[in-house]
Length: 237
Image (cartoon, rainbow, N blue to C red; front, side, top):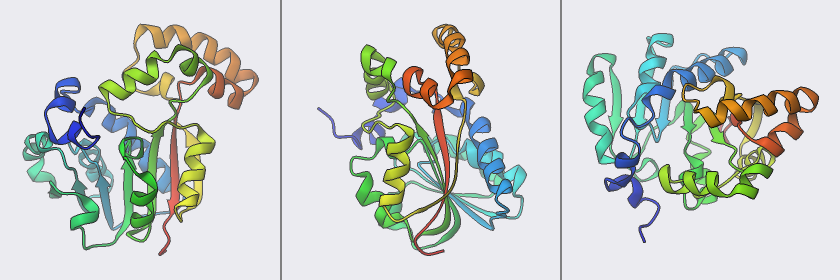
């Protein structure tokens, strides 16, 4: 059995996810931009940890033309994508961030990262002083329907390498326990707004609309279909 990190340093993740979720990147970047603008944050430097193909940073370049942009990832396969973005003046590094970074940043992005980390407490505690602000995007895999069915959780584990599973409250608690201060959180309405929506998701959305209209939190806990964006301050603001 492979270790969690080997999913990304070997070919297995690329085989299961050949586009490296590039199609979701403008959607994620839009949330990042909105949550920063809403809180009056104009970053001069942004670092995307686990940046994958780098498409989020490419999208953000249009919004922040003068900012220094950095991307870190450990998967060798992503470097081929980076070559396409030389004109965007983004600094990409094929390294472990905590082992090689020597800078601090205005904003660090952790978009779909902590569900992949074998020890998220150690990782986040050692990261909290590396930027003034952090933007997290976290899938909320734990819902009543997912636990009863199990297959969606197991698919996320096998295909995309999720090894940690969250509800909203668990995710926010983890971030706070690791030394961050929550500034704002918001649901993404991923099952309705994310680019990739299969037929099963569209059918489930009928029930989600009904239940969430009655009680949003109950709808998320029972029927899932949500992800969470979080803006937090680090331990060294």
